Length: 334
Ligand SMILES: NC(=O)c1ccc[n+]([C@@H]2O[C@H](COP(=O)([O-])OP(=O)(O)OC[C@H]3O[C@@H](n4cnc5c(N)ncnc54)[C@H](O)[C@@H]3O)[C@@H](O)[C@H]2O)c1
Image (cartoon, rainbow, N blue to C red):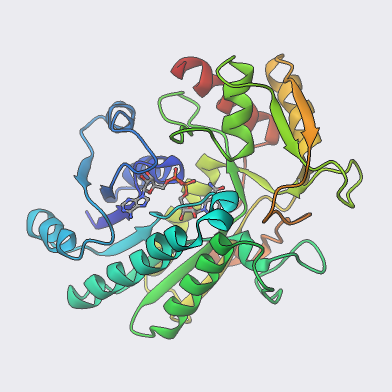
């Protein structure tokens, strides 16, 4: 069994990917400092995997943690690097927090990988690297533009650093907007504090745990005035990591740095999601339209053709499944 170090593996995308890795016959090793998750995610993972996951509580910025891990698990075959902060608005207010965790954290990890001769990496990038694109959908060939937030800059910097380090084989996955939860309802999205992403806020608000949702901006140049995003089921996204890892560890990579858009290829507006939520769950969300939020782009969705032709991966789950699974998770969790 190949050991895969999963930084941020108790977070939203990381935890779902741990399950997919386990199901695909890999041995996931989780490193997480619990800065945006809870230890009880381990319980959900244990139920889904049928065994206790291997977990190290620690910080990616702590160089010594990697030696401690390897001394206990043996060699690491690849790293999937999720650990980062991700709140666009917060990154505008506290940029250094983001540069330190997302950029310095990546460098500390890469120095450890170089020292420990780990040469394979799957990197969590984001569609934010495209900035405000001139046209949609965006393909991997679409030139990146200035990012709209320090968070987006950290992902652009991460990509540049990885591209410059030719000793490393990198699969760079540009995620669009992951939502949903495992259909079992045993794991899902549960950020600490007030959620800054649409769906966890929406489900917590419908569950009566938060005030009504504020839609950030209703005067954008889109058909209904709200932002458009490419929402993807987190389990589809998790499966993309397995496809990517298979390519990496099967030595099929043709360039040391390969980029893939991981989205569905369809854009939905915030209002379409809110109406879709009601159709999928029977629950009517309360919301009001507020001012725009700094750092948000108007519209972005993926051309995911490269992931399909090269990785053999495609998103399979519908928006309705994403919303139903997110609500199922919220209800079970609350
Ligand atoms: N969720 C999205 O909408 C989205 C979109 C595009 C890209 N991404 C990227 O995907 C990755 C995972 O996102 P997510 O939605 O699962 O976020 P998340 O916050 O749920 O998960 C990140 C995990 O990393 C941990 N972590 C953060 N800093 C750490 C550190 N210094 N050391 C150890 N652990 C640390 C947190 O505790 C958390 O469990 C991030 O890199 C994010 O930027 C997310």
